[in-house]
Amino acid sequence: MEFEYSKKTKMYMEQLVDFMNKHIYPNESVFREQLDSQADRWQVPPIMEELKARARERGLWNLFLPESEYGPGLSNLEYAPICELMGRTPIASEVFNCSFPDTGNMEVLVRYGTPEQKKQWLAPLLEGTIRSAFAMTEPDVASSDATNIASSIVRDRDDYVINGRKWYTTGATDPRCKIVIFMGQTDPQNPDRHKRQSMILVPKDARVICYHGQPRPWEVPVDSNSVR
Image (cartoon, rainbow, N blue to C red):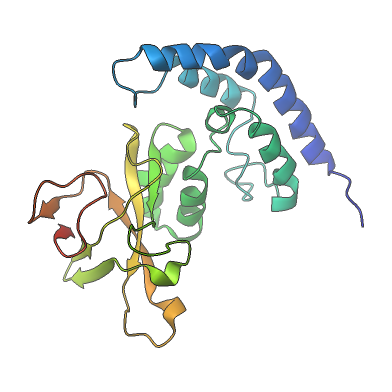
């Protein structure tokens, strides 16, 4: 079996190592100091935006996307060692606009988004000017198995009503988060339990109605929350 990296992978690995040695590792302490000195823990340290601009100038941007229209066109096999390099420091993936959950959310929008959705959400995600979240995990079930998801998504004329409680929603507390991909049941009576679920785009500023107590972002009781 051939384990040799492709020429494209080697090229990006060399550029990535060079960039990380020159710009990312020396600024890890700067990132930490800026983060600790801010009054709001969720604000983005200025050094992050500086590093992102440098990475984009070098063409080290959106490396995860296999579509050459938006990224370098790397396969999963080619991207794996590059991802391993980024994983050596907690700040690198965002610097190269390759951090979760934006990576998966962008791939969903690339493949299934309408032209309007791509313009509104995909374009700024590709630019790295906004962030996103993926709402799957629920407190009362083993959410790693999506067939256990209990939240409901029901169509009401031109709207969708979502009832559910999500937590550990990565990215939801980021002030740059503007869009959430929410997983819930749309066809609960389907005999095939693997075809009961769907995902829906929910703008972060969607109207939330809570009938019992005050809602917290993406963590409200299953039977008392509606998002339209």
